[in-house]
Length: 283
Image (cartoon, rainbow, N blue to C red):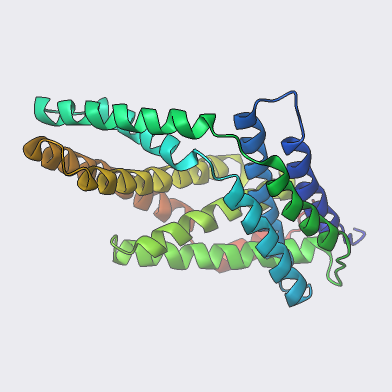
């Protein structure tokens, strides 16, 4: 099979896709921002794949531009997530006191989310660093083939994900490990999808990984919601305490499910993945 060296082009094109989404006036602001944020996340995964092969200064500069654009586009994402998990909690509340408190919390969060969505995001402020990142990416070149770089990235991603899974299993209070684990799960999904039908995971494993990253994300957002509720000191004390306990139980349930899926998705030694990768991938 002929070696290809197109990953830098893919990186530049993916960043360019984020710019195009931001400029697409046929979409409303929320949709434009959502699509651009997804493209930025894919760009970050591609950059991590290329990092061992490209100039360190260029990689750092691209990463900084992507980070700046993502921060500009963060917008209402956080409060939207809080509204979502608050509504999820409302579906399973066992008692009246916490239900009354949660109704107040939901009303406040909904008002905050509405204001966040009304705020106009400066598209040009987000697009400028993306254009700078794309220009740098367009000048990159690699010695190793795309297949080799992608295989190496998959091995690194799996080892790190397996390490983070073990850290979370050993201490569920390790919030940093949980956050890192989710990033590695999402990277693994992106890399495997980039490899297409020749990816080492396959449809069934991708579905498990997708569920896993959602569970970890829910656990994190429930934790943020519990912190917000704890900060609302004007709420009725007994109902607030009961609601925080309910959120803690919800977090524990998601974490247990995530650890079960973690055993299925990260329980095998890396050498098995290496054998699958040796069969060859095509991107």
